Length: 503
Image 1 (spheres, one colour):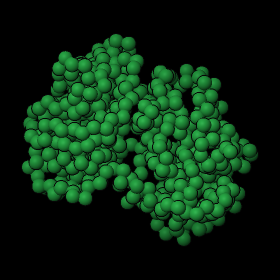
Image 2 (cartoon, helix red, strand yellow):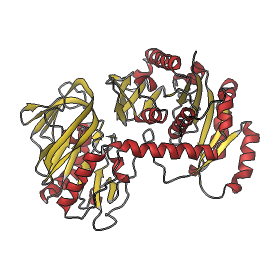
Image 3 (cartoon, helix red, strand yellow):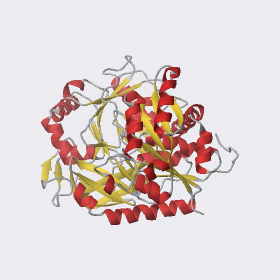
Image 4 (tube, helix red, strand yellow):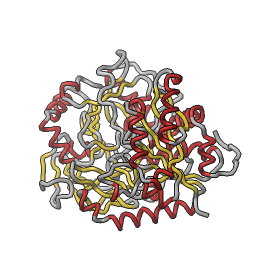
């Protein structure tokens, strides 16, 4: 029996499609249904490696976790990873097939469409309900003929649709009603309801607005979701805040700065630190904002050579060198690790238009880019000496990188020789998700505090990132249940009454 389908569409990007779809996954799982997420095409540099060794967008990973199922690339069959303003790496069913400009990508429409339908059909045969997510807006009229993510996908899946608008951005009437007006009669008929997201203030002041939208649009508003601050879910590709606290809030708080790269990827590597007691994480987009943090992180990037050039031209490279010379600690992750080396080689022009580039020279290593992409999950125990301490702990991580690295003359293409390579004040790793393990995270932060001469009370009740996420998944599902008419969700899917088996 083919699964029933509900699709979350949006009036634009960033309105909350991803997190609302995640919430629906958890609610339907709570009701006892076998549910899976699906997004035909993502555009994001925030990716993940599945157990099978395939690559997919992090948003569908979060949704799969909410659905209590194992992430699979069929849940996100096409992933576009922007490498420059005019082209992206294209990942189909978990594996990169090349870099394409938009026109060349559209020329692959039949191949892409076939992969999307194959993936969806497999999921629909295995699960009872599929929660689909659209992309951007379904009413981008100049792109609609090539759009495989929104209304075309809804038709293929025969999905009931709900349209989400963001009132915090302003223009909620124009965005919801304008989107409905631009849809064809057949497409409009698929829209079963509307959701107003990110409301602030007194809801009674919006009652007239609800009446107007429902009468003018001819669609029921399922609910108005109040803005929240305490619930944290990873969104599809939301940029991290550029500036949090310029300085640590108290003298013993650890100040961790992350350089905000133009093509930054996998910022979720250290977002977990935001929730850590006694830690202030901030993103730095200009040299003058760097200051003297207790730790400086060079994050991953989709374009190592381009971002390496940016850091040199913007003055960051010299500033980082001076910071390290003063005793500052620098951690490079993936692309950030690669650019810390002596040389970046790209003879086949995989990463850049140039064949070679000098790195920062912080570590004696050379990275050569090639067609092969390393996709690997890692479960290991790390015990390294850095910051004058032994840093230990179990790590569950993954690797996503192009190219192989020669470290001190030894091949480190698969990351086995030095999972966390430490050289003086500099350290680097290919591991994404390094801090998600409570054991390693606590050991690392305690070593950092000791190095900084700060008193840090270790968190005896430290939990893994997974435990923290589970609590936020529960809070988010409760938030939706309190503010949406979920009876409308059940009725539009024509679901039989099911006992709520989880919470």
